[in-house]
Length: 297
Image (tube, rainbow, N blue to C red):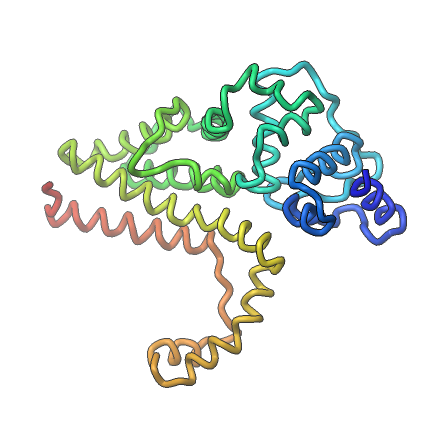
């Protein structure tokens, strides 16, 4: 296969070195002028040969010398789910296909359907598996605030490990997943201590999750934007800087201009810092609402 041999030559010549990131599957398909399925098959062939490996939240990289790909085992539902999670972690949920999972496992394209009915069913299994990958201590925190902090940081860690997770769940259509219910039960258990009525308890729970999900959704969106533009966040901001300076200098946005003028050394958006700030503001507001008694329906 041309893609496989071309990448092998680049590695052998030193143009690609261990740890170097390869383009996402969609860019591979575009660069070599082939169908997405062909590009997926080529990258999976390289993985099966131990030439490249999928690294979560990074993508596909050139494997280090001596790296050995995991041998293909008996096809199982659990194995299919694990392979699908690896694809989504490395390439994003948009790159996930049943055919791609089959290629990664080295089986016939229709084989996964014997164990998983559809791609939609597979995504639900993936989400449930991921939600169950971090456990809570048996003992609950001493206060409602500590309980909500624990739950929020646990779920934030899960979304950072699996950035596609923020694209799966919906506020309007909650998923009946056993492992997701564990997180919900933890949050509701903390909220029970506040003495809210049932409707307000659920409303606060929804607001709590909406904050987390809204922030986490940007993890996958950034990965998608980088794939579509071919530019990192820093490179994109460098391109936008002249336009932002032009807007500030126009006089139409005085507050915006003043903030830019007073920035010392620029501004680096750190989602972990934003998460902690948002969590503190959210919990402070909830505490103030309880103290003031403003928690009717």
